[in-house]
Image (cartoon, rainbow, N blue to C red; front, side, top):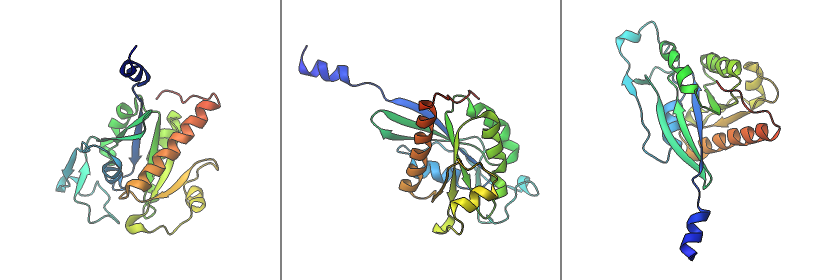
Amino acid sequence: MTGSDATLQKVSAPDTVKILIAGGFGVGKTTMVGSVSEIVPLRTEEPLTTAGLGIDDLNGIEEKKATTVALDFGRITVSQDLVLYLFGTPGQQRFWFMWNDLAVGALGAVVLVDVRRPESSFAAIDFFERRKIPFVIGVNGFYGEHPYEPEEIRESLALPEDAQVLLCDARERGSCRDVLIALIDQLIATTARGSHPSPP
């Protein structure tokens, strides 16, 4: 066997893990996928129109001009052995029917929270709790501001003490990567305890 043959035998395809980036309308899901993805992300954004008047709550996000109508897709290589496929969910309630399909095969999720409108992410938290899909909370600090500590946010969202709440900025690659690594560490710890996530 030549040296090159031996090298080829040692190289194996990395494990791939499907992760959802979820949360309410306008919390920063598309921004997070775009910030951390090593490929040009696939986006299904469409301009907001008058059809959403009275349906989409723009309170606090009046500057928002477009919305995801299907999904966002990106990819990040965490290590030579692990690649994450990221699927951003649509935030508007009328598109929530797609979440069940997007959740198929997902091992975990990041639920983004906007502290200006925490109630917008309650549905996402409930979705993953009901399906026993592990998740972490990423508190998106718009304009770099984090007025509340993780403990305060955990209490306001009525989360258990072991729920991970991480402060982040969806615009910054390093910040988003840290949130994803925290989720992967949680999944590894869960597997090590022999408690495998239930399929959605």
